[in-house]
Image 1 (cartoon, rainbow, N blue to C red):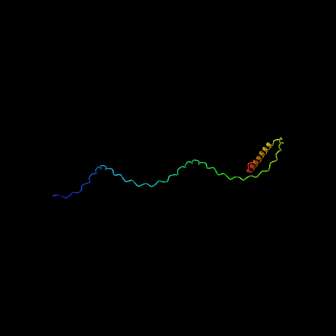
Image 2 (cartoon, helix red, strand yellow):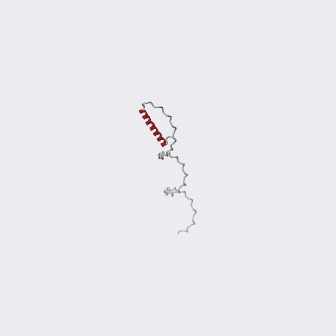
Image 3 (cartoon, helix red, strand yellow):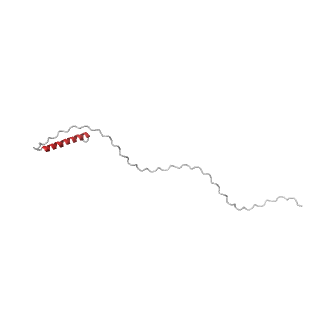
Length: 113
């Protein structure tokens, strides 16, 4: 026949640590971080190249004609002509008339005052 169960014995000593287990699987990527603060303004850029010269301006309106100046003093009388100089006298008269017309035109155009 079997006797009664005896009292419980003392706990055994602690066992040695076990062998490390295999590495765990790689975890999922973390969520994206918040945006960084706004950076400082950049330095001022260099000046641009000079622009091309502008086109010439339009011609201005013609000026008003000036007033006619007073008549000049009478010229000194010419020397007496030689006899028979009819052709030279006519040429001299033509040159004088042309000079008078040119002087009058210059005064009207304002070129001589």
